[in-house]
Length: 132
Image 1 (tube, rainbow, N blue to C red):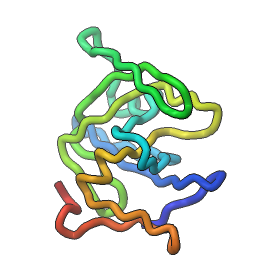
Image 2: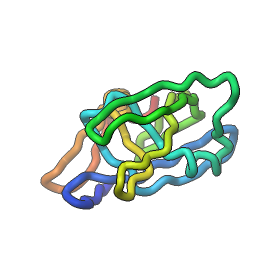
Image 3: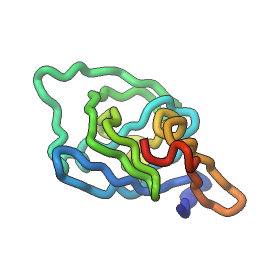
Image 4: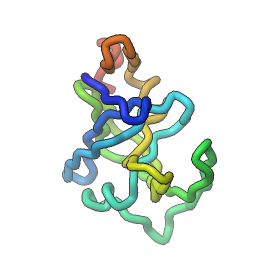
């Protein structure tokens, strides 16, 4: 799968399925420095993912600052040919001062054996781990 560079940062798009609704989210940063995957609240709301009174808010910290997020388990998260079922995402505002709709973290990369091929600007996935 091709990846794109924006300001020398690697981006891709993901497909998310939640309660039988599937959406595609563009401009997701591939970030090996992020332990978890976070997606923009205003976009996942299109699939019915919204905060509930029982949700616990977490504070995450990174180079871009701090952000309050909640977690939700989705039916599937797909990048190119690789799909992970019953995957937990974090949901937040994603207000970092530039256009970004999500961060694909190490949680997804490790489960799929994702290889970031910068020479060819491609994402590749382990055949053994492709569909979890």
